Structures are given as structure tokens and as C-alpha cells.
Image (cartoon, rainbow, N blue to C red; front, side, top):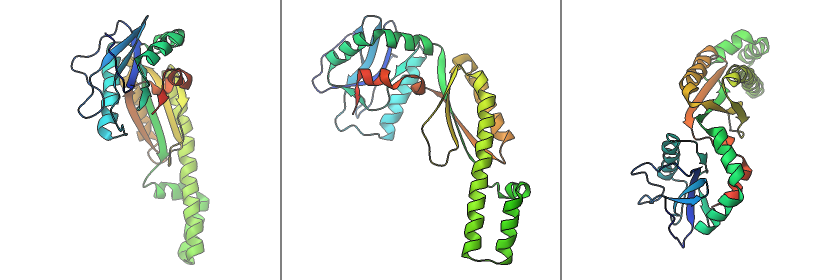
Length: 253
């Protein structure tokens, strides 16, 4: 992969081992899609393109970014950058690749042959009847609200239902975590997501990813009256690249 000059900044997609080849006809973000190139430094290469003007998180560009990372992962480990990472120029990328070489190389070794799967757990939808059957306090509040309807009774009932659904989902989420964690190489808690009681990412051997997803789906069926389980993958291993590794290379745009 050759290095070419740019004066408008470079968009950085990922760091790879230097021997990795770019997929044929692969393109980057922007309209028209940016032409990709590699910035080589020793055993590493950063996949970059010219930074598009007025870059925004449009669906088209988000998908282009992620699809490229997944295509790159077909040929070897990928240290992925999150969407919107831009360096001043290629010299800045080269300097930081040199400075972080050992950390980047170690991360690539750890991610080799592995992908990320994300699992989110939310309170079950349409589970009121199952909740009423199991929760005596909710049954009593519902009976009271029917006997003496009014704003206060409805408010107490609504709060009790919401709290009970969340607690049931949280308990199911912890059981899901205990079931799935042994099948993963690592697990990390993700940021809080509105409505979710669990947001967990798993580092999974690529060869085991289909079985892992099937297990997550099976757990969703087992806990359907307590929780809704959403799994997504395979994904680039964003959650298993340290913030330091990303921030050393480039700053967010």
C-alpha cells in the first residue's frame, strides 16, 4: 500500500498488519465515496482516505464505515476506529503509528480470529399478564385501581408495573450474562442505553460466533415473559480497543 499526500486531513478507518491487502473495489465514506489508501509504518498500516467536507453521521456513511471494517476483518485482525476520526495529515498518522506500535501490535494479536457480539436486554413487552400472575403487590394494586379508579390509583399501579418489569428484566439479564460469558473470550459492559437493563459486548472466536448468536436467541425464548433480548453481530471489535489506543492516533472530528 502506498502513501499519498493530502492537505485537507485524512479520515482514519482502522489499523491493520502491514501485510493485509485492501479489498478490491472497497471505498470509504463521503459522496462520491472516498478512495482508500494505506499509510504504512513498520509492521502496521492505517487505512485512510481524504476526509470528506462537512462529515456528518449519515446512515450511508455509517454503513460504509462499518461495512469496510467487516470486509477488512475477513483477511485478518482489525483495530477499528469509530466513525468520524480524522487526523491532520498523513505525517501525523505515521508519527502516532510509530509511537503506539507495540500497543497496536498487541491489540491486533488479541483480536485475531475474533469478532464482537453485542447483547442488549430490555423489559419484556406485552408481559403484563405474566407479571400480574407472579407479583402479588401488582395484583393488589390493580384490584384496588379497578375498585376505586382515579389518578392516584392509576399512578401507583403504573409505577409498580414499571418497576416490577424492570426488576424482572434485570434479573433475567444477569442470568443471560452468566450463561453467555463462559462462551466468550472477554466481555465488557457498554454505555447506558435508555430502556435497557443490560448492554454487554462479547469478544467471540469467529468460528464460534454462529453458535453464540443461536444461544443468545435461545435465551431470548427462555426469558420472553421477563425480558426482550436483542443480539447483534458479528461486529467490528470496537469495545475491545482501549480508548487510549484510539485517542493516541487521532482526535474525534
